[in-house]
Amino acid sequence: MYAIIVGGGKVGLNLARELLDSGAEVTLIEQRRDRYLKIEAELEHVVHYGDGTELWVLERAGIQRADFVIAVTGDDEDNILICQIAREKYLVERIVGRVNNPRNRQYFELLGIRPAFSATDLILRLIEHEVPRYGLIHLLDLPNDRLEIIEIEVKAGAAADGRTVQDLDMPDGSLVISILRESGGFVPKADTVIKAGDEVLICLDPGLESAVTPLFGLS
Image (cartoon, rainbow, N blue to C red):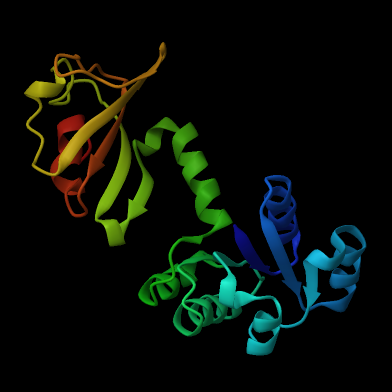
């Protein structure tokens, strides 16, 4: 695998290290000279000096043969532009964009830049997972593949409390794929009884969330 990483900050540098350790071929592009020199002292020829939004810099890095282009600069506009160039001009199939400001995620999505990750969003999801009062967590959203995975905590007295998986009145396009309890997680069978306090993982088609969550006690 050949990956081009644009942005030599902590994220880009650590990602380059991990990919190199896994045996991948990597080129890291950094435009700040002081940071480039520091990285060059460690990674040598792996790092290139230049602006990753410029075509000649990307071509010098070998974007024509790249399997991945990963834009992790500190500027969302640059990350969007780099991903667009990689996909539309050089036909790179796999692009990843960093979202520095979560409010800009909508622009990445409107332009079809997926996956786009935000450290803020990732931390919020961890908080949601650790704080029971949130009740509902979006674990995975793949709109292009029409797939979502959510985690719901079953409330006492909910329609699902005390019922078997097969007896749940789940809409078509939704499926209980896992149950997490104090004793551990497991894949349920048709006759598995759901209990209050269970954390249920559900795979569903987009748009079905409002029809599924009331069964588990969430309005």
